[in-house]
Length: 178
Image (cartoon, rainbow, N blue to C red):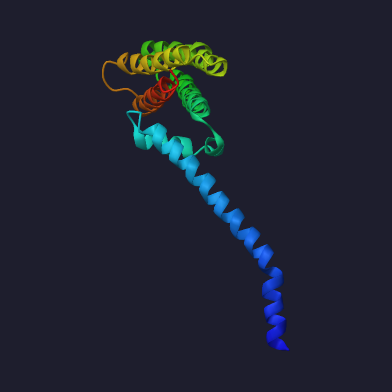
């Protein structure tokens, strides 16, 4: 009796087991496909590891197409540029000797946040990747110009590099849409 009860439990729960197994396999395949798209996309960028780690850090990347990945990367640039501008504004209060380059950088980052990033987002949403590429390239140039304005020791080196490199990655991804 005990054996027949065990066997009947296995047969009765088999559909549930099968459904659960199929769901797990489906999730693995979908997750694997998303990771494959991220990896394949990032292979076309100059900073593969930065690209992969940045995109994988944003959950919506797993469901995105290449255009969506470009939008995610532009959002990452925006976040890094915002962080940098906040730091610049703090440094302006603390470092009067660096006032000139910091003001230049504040202006550069304001341009990134009010012109370059909105241009890239609007262009991607409208299906015009060339303008998106221009916006992200401009952001990279602005970050480099900020760094160069210090003519030596800059308190923004790491932040400028992060904005520059993510901008270059975003540009490379948008180029795939041309």
